[in-house]
Length: 304
Image 1 (cartoon, rainbow, N blue to C red):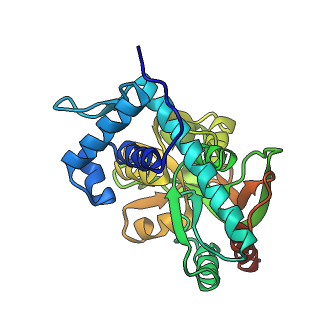
Image 2: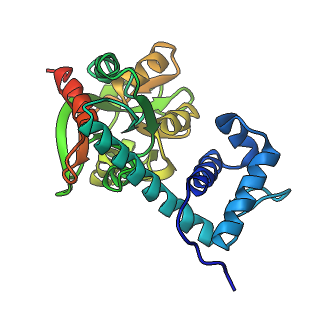
């Protein structure tokens, strides 16, 4: 018979935080630096948590690290619990008119090289106003950012807009130009732009993002021959550089590769698009003073 969990204690919360760190690091060894404790201590904490919960959360050993089905469910529940605790801390700090705690931001990748993206300036303003707050940035795919904002894991998300949710508010921030590229060694690399037909481009192997996004919508719109996928633009760039695929990249991110002769833009007006970025946050509950302060900083540095 499994043990029934009674009241949660501070010790339980600490064990759950250790467990979450191990899951997010992908194993005990990888979590050592993050947690600043030894592997044997981490292993003991995990065992204590499993005894406390009355279930096996993960398999660990020579075969590697893997979550059980129950372990996945506990991880997801722990995320919601910790988010609720952080939200409570924010509300209490609001009552004291102080900026403390943590600001969790979910961001889409490869935006820092965009000259129109002023998120770094907004963070600078925010830190001056709230120097004691821990800024925690997660660079993850669009769908995970949206989900994370909705379930409270992230206070603010910064993503390319592609669909809207009635549960979220959106603040326009900046945009970026997307073009189709091929890499050195690709059959189209040495071809002149004026000689390329639409049909010839459609015959090429295409690398696209693996989640719903403007990138995926553009690939479907033109019926590009998807032959490879990646969950971020670093992966797309790697596939393009292999010389085996074509793919969309932001012009600011592709520019160094083009300058080095490693990539070339496929110049065809049908195969380009402009991508708008926005900050998003939950409508309910309303943002705390801490989150609102960051949103104000973002708006103050919105590209015009």
